[in-house]
Amino acid sequence: MTSENDRKSKVVIVKSSDVSEAVENALRLVGGFEKVVSEASSILLKPNFCGGVPGERGSHTSIAVLKSLLELLSPFKKKVFIGEADGSFNWADQVFSSLNVHETAKRYGAKVVNLSKGPYQELTVPQPLSLKTVRVSRLLMECTVISVAALKTHPWVGVTFSMKNMYGAVYQQEKAMLHAGLDKNIVDITKVIPPRLCLVDGIYAVRQGGFKYGVWVGYPPDKMDLMVAGYDPVATDFVCTKLLGRNPDQIDYIKLAAAQNLGVNNPNQIEVLTENYEYTNL
Image: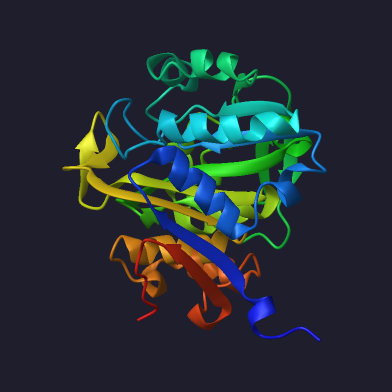
């Protein structure tokens, strides 16, 4: 018989000044890589790189977190990709170069891919809120996708974590065109390219943000030393919203995603496990 607790979406919060420890312990508490990686032929790590300014802490996924993940993935002997698509204000290849992503990937036998190049696939969105089709790299259909987002506020939709990170994976570089009806577009995109596992890098976070070169960065960035993990992108983003002191009930795309059965946003249906951190459902 399944208990109410068994049906809850699990979200993990780990606090540690050691990045590798934070990543490893978050994955351990959420249930490990095994159930995500064991049956996968290939893995795609989708960081939030083009949503930030290289070198501005908290504005993008940190290379330290990426290195920790690649280290933990090494024993599985899987083909691993690090993928990001061009953004409205950043070109993925330029960001890869600025952050030395190719050198990091080579060290662990991974491959870096620009998700705005190469073969693509036009996906039909089921029961669309706004977008009838979404164009994505074919690689996203061939790999198990792990979202490695940043813990950030956002100037237009309030916050940006796991689901907004998948919005950044669409093929088109002109993503600013999709900012009309952005909340609905985030949900439609998550429907067709849902992450299998969500990690949110809160080592540095953007709570009070501002624009630099047209991109949202921290003024200043907040060193929170947090790592969040979950399999449910809605529940994960719900918890992350609270970590930044925002009200999830006021984030439209979280409410819309829950209504579309992409996950849960009811705190009574979310089990939060913590390590060295005190979390409240209030």
